Amino acid sequence: MNKEIIEIFTKIIQLLEIKGDKALIFKINAYKKAIFILNNLERENKKIEDIYNELGLAGIKKLGIGEKNAKKIEEFIKTSQKGSGKIKEFDKLQEETAIKQIITFYFESKGLGLQELKENAKKRKIIYSRFTKPAKQLLELAGSVEKAKQAITTVANWANSRKLDYAIETIFKKWLELDRLKPKEIVKKPFYNGLPMIYSEMKKKWFVISKSGEWLEYADKKEKMEWKIIE
Image 1: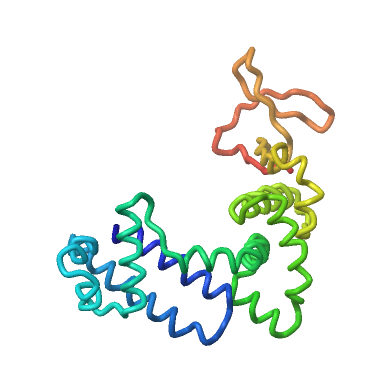
Image 2: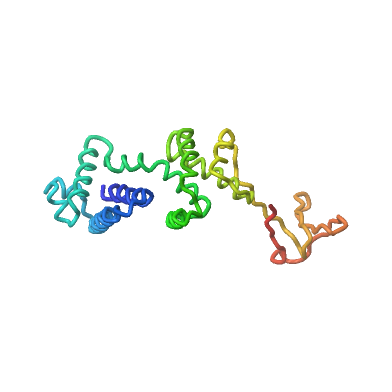
């Protein structure tokens, strides 16, 4: 259970960073401290649920975890006993930041990290609001943030393999083709002194194709063959 709570707290930090409120830095630091403590418990082979079952909320707080996060851990332990563990704040944050998550992921697919995205938005190089409407439409179309991210990844891989640029609107245009979009296959072909080569399955030999189209049997070492990517 330590690892499950660490994973949720880590995701909460990511969502708080996406949310972007400077006042949330204290919350983020509190989550980082809780993660540090839980990681130590994991290394010591101690379970947070055992501590809670023995000493209650006070036992969690005694570890150095603040009251608010101790209550979230308590919430997770109690809901885990009834089925799947949950933390309401995590679910709420996921809902609140859904549009921003999609926009952030879109820019990540183009090689722009969250910090750089924020700096560019601050300098007005990126007008963040311009992406809100298409991101909302994509969320409605996909049905969930995860499926929207999958769609972005599919289009990004397809476009990048062809050295094409893509806008967030490209996802809509390609929506009906998503299951057929594949990255362009990278093919390596053999050459010798700049001339293409071919392998004959019948003769089990390599041949060099001369400029005039003649097949010349290859007699040099295989190490001398040069493999080039053909796009």
